Length: 257
Image 1 (tube, one colour):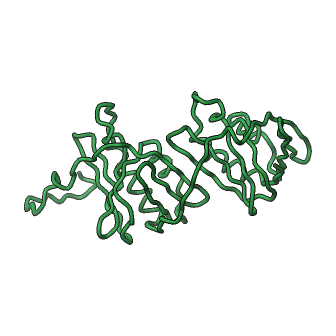
Image 2 (image 1 turned 90 degrees about the vertical axis):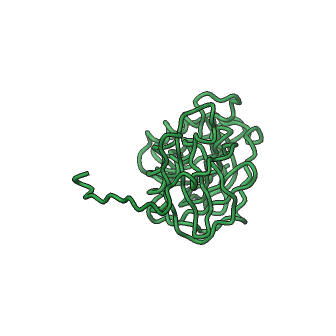
């Protein structure tokens, strides 16, 4: 691999992908980033087996390599704001930043887990502001109950007019309705970590796309692709516990309340 990328763009991509690096990996290669350069872009992939993040930065070059995630993050963070060239051989990666150079160990890319991305079923479903607001509203209601895994995440439930974001800990319930074109997927539950990552990393200029299959959900926004294993289980029928046609309504100024 030989690729050139601006330090700021590279560091932003590394920081985003690092959220999926496990603190203690069962497979040593999962403590690495997989870097793959092609078509004027550099894809940085990290996975903990349940959540995969692919972060993309503009770059020039081609090739692929695996580098230690924590080591690369610390090294790039300390460099001056300039263009950085990464070039690898079988065992090492040379990092050249104009006024200096150092080497990092390099690992075989074939050992890294295979990540498949399928955008053919995805649709532009919501602007980021709605997703960010919806997740900020629902995440505090997520349960932490190992006996009821279906409550330990945020439920994305398609409706005729868009989709609902729902969370409950069996004591309180938070529901946010997102209006958009009908989402062509079944409802699914994603873990708190994935929902938090989306909320924290989507920007106001992004359009969020997503789809789901039997085992995973995929999200695309900005320069990030997120692939997450869905939580297995049936989310409670939340519509049935929301009062309908209730005539007892109290209205009060927010500040006074």
